[in-house]
Each structure stands twice: as structure tokens, then as C-alpha cells.
Figure 1 (spheres, rainbow, N blue to C red):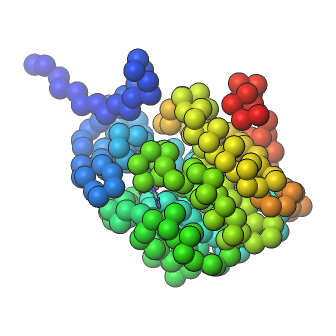
Figure 2: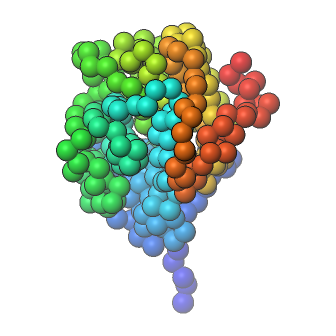
Length: 273
Ligand code: SAM
């Protein structure tokens, strides 16, 4: 008897892709903004993909979500409120709640991402049931243009810079973000794989540098993202200072990672400087 195997592959280049063997495909929908697929994989549990690219898996989502929230958390004055742009899975909001943020506004463009996450990742999406989290379904770019509230942290938890997220990597957007930051507030954006998506990192770093006097990129190991090496870039109007307080360990994040993730290999420095 012939064994039938099912695989989901994310293409990194014309010549390379990463494939996950899947037990089942649980969902595939085309929304007004993107295509959403959900797979039950053998090695990484449930996997959410948007437009063919992995957004999160049950097994390694903690790296991305800890790193996009906990690194900027420990710099400058203790933050109390935050704006998340994107983040429809609820993972960033969940980590901010753990860090005792008092108010979180989450602007996600696609209601379907939230619904899918509530159904298939209920533990992660539980953040949307917390009264400290206000979910706004709408374009983050318009939200920052048309509102005036100030935030201590702004987390740009977006898809790659194509389609609805393209403008989330633009200088104009970063200028609007600046108007929403408190004096020593910090904005952080995911900035792609330095190996396969140099363009995303250089767009984010250079765009933020046009607008903010303090910009720093840092790295993390995320096994299910292209090449495994992922970058984040944070910016502020004031200098970055690590607060003198005990650091809570995550599963990935710890005191060493808080400083060590900013040490960049030479090929990454060449992309941004
Ligand atoms: N961890 C992920 C990654 O880097 O692969 C990001 C996850 S999160 C699901 C990304 C979200 O950004 C998606 O749900 C998408 O709908 C949302 N998004 C894209 N463009 C947006 C925009 N202009 N405004 C608000 N949300 C947006």
C-alpha cells in the first residue's frame, strides 16, 4: 500500500523551501486582505499561515512574542499602556498582559485572523477577552493617522512588507507613530529575516532612523521563520536605558538575551549601517 503524505511548504527563494509534514489541513480561506491557512503539523502543532508564510506555530510562537514585547519592556520608564498594530492572533497582547500593562489597544486589519485564532489557538487569543485589551478591527495605518492617544510602547506585529502591511514599513507611517509615543516611549517592529529578507530589515531600520534619533536592531532564533534568524528593530525619541530591575525569564527571553540579542553579526550590520 502506498503511504500518502501531506506537506505544507513555505518558499524562501526560487530554489529553497521549508516543508512541514502535516496531519491535516484544518482551514483555508480567502479574506478581503489575504489568504489564511491552518495546518495541524507533526513537529510544530497547529500552524497559521498567511499568504503562504508562517505566522505562528503552537510550538515556537513564544520566541517571537516574548522578543517583540519583553525586550522593549525593560528599557526606559516602566510602560503602562501599549498599541499593537497587527497581532490578530493575540500573542503579543497576551505577553503584554503578563507584564502587567494596564491598557492595550490592538488594531488588526483582518477580523478573520482574530476569529481563526480564537477557534484554533484559544489560549493565545484569550487576551482578547481581557477587559484591559481593546480590539479595533481596522487598518493600523489609518488608525495612527486619525487618532491622538499616546502610548508607552507601540508594537508593530505585522505580516511581511507586501499587501496590507506594505505601508507599515514606510517613513510616513513611522512619523505618525512618533506622534503617538510618550516622551521616552519605544516603538518596535518585526523586521524580517536578515538572510532572506534584507529588504524588510533595511526598510525598517532606515525608515525609523529618518524619524527617530535612537534606533537599534536585535535578533532571535525562530525555527519556523525563514532561515531561523529573525530581526526586530526598535526606536525611541530618547536614549535607550535598561531599567535596573529583576528580569523575569520567559522560555526564550532572559537577562542575557536582553543585552546579547543586540550583538549583531557583520553581515547584518552591513544591511543596516
Ligand atoms: N508573527 C507574525 C510574523 O511576523 O510572521 C505576525 C503575526 S500577525 C498574525 C500579523 C497581522 O498583521 C495579520 O493578522 C495581518 O492581518 C495584520 N496586518 C497586516 N497589515 C495590517 C495593517 N495595515 N493594519 C493592521 N493589521 C495589519
